[in-house]
Image (cartoon, rainbow, N blue to C red; front, side):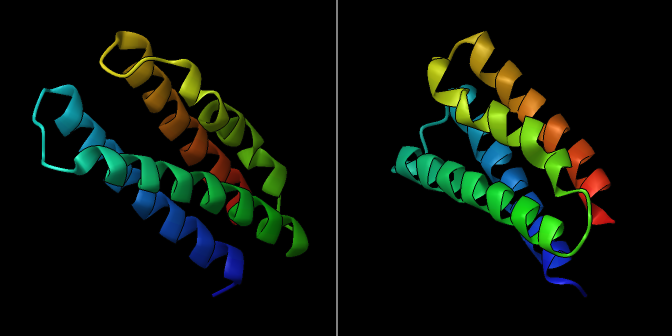
Length: 106
């Protein structure tokens, strides 16, 4: 398995975990210290997306396909947690990552 495939799978799993935790927080379920975990997962997804794209480009695949997902991820701090724009941007990030991963899988 090429390294960028492994990176894409790991980043996708982290993104799913981030989204699941975000849904719990959005619904008002305070899971103890879940907020810092949510932020740590967000950072890991950003790094994983950049790394996946870089590894894909180095492997000759279309790593640039992950750039829209990375751009959306990097604009997440402009939204406010608990408001509609936050979860809407999160879903857009997930959709962009899925489309980018499809293109970068190569």
